[in-house]
Image 1 (cartoon, rainbow, N blue to C red):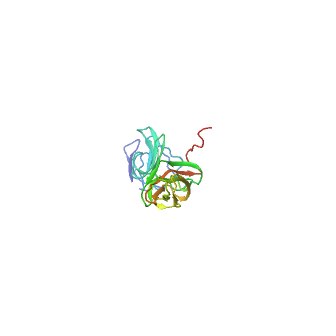
Image 2 (cartoon, helix red, strand yellow):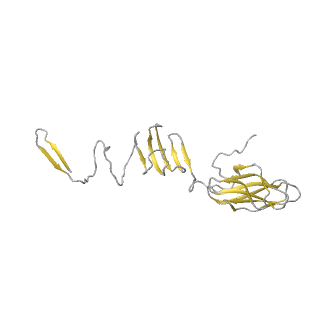
Image 3 (cartoon, rainbow, N blue to C red):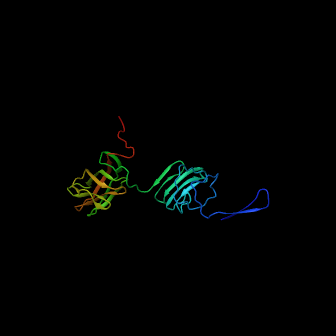
Length: 236
């Protein structure tokens, strides 16, 4: 690299030659704003982003960008520091006021355990006249682990006609087949284990004998460690 300088008191010029590569223990300057380079590995103490600064992965250029990656910095239109980690469907975002999360959790979230706190209900009456097991109710679980289920099954006519109820997980039998000839609801309890977040707990029904319908109601999930508030008393 060549630099030409003019002497302060005359017209003579001094030509200085510098190597194209520099090696130094440190740089002490007022500003590094003109630097544009691949800096390799950087070890730093404190980094403060001002109102024009941001950090991002290649291709994710703003907080609103839905490309997969990471972006965090200051957004002038909202006058807030924000971050966006993820893609269009699965992400964790801070918009300057609220934390926004979308997607399926896996890994270190506390697994549920069997207990008596009702965390989900599907209480409406459902029925079928099919002679093979047919899905009539379904609940998706938010965490893995174990869970207790209760449901009620009956036949819609008196006279000893038999009907059946069966718990499935993700379309496969997971519980014990429950058969009854009662025209009044019979309550069944079943514990399921080794569940994963996103699993579908399903209630299937069938009629065994001709001339009746299988009916069910009050399909409920219970745990011993609810992650959301649960009402345990409504009056004195």
